[in-house]
Length: 133
Image (cartoon, rainbow, N blue to C red; front, side, top):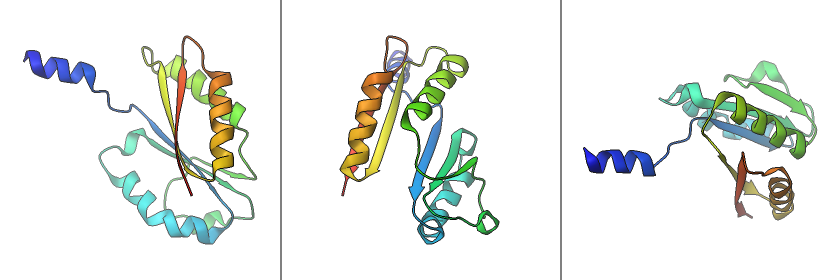
């Protein structure tokens, strides 16, 4: 029991996962939709949220999955970080670390790191991890 308690204390699972997907077109979204559907059907479906940003028009009637928010244009990182920070403070007391994971262009990674530094404080710290192509 002592080892199990120590492992549970040292290993934290995410309490929520929010995906912010930025794509140019319906085709790019459709390409990834099957994987997103699997996430929404799995055991963590209650903790998973999809937010989609499309820089061109998108046909919502083609969605087969529950997308929380659909936006046209590019994200305002400062506003998104603030929303996450507010939600963490309100809904997840005791959580003080937010992981931000990017698979995308280096320029977006730079924007995310800059915003993370600006938005982090003693209550919530944003850690950015990137995979660039």
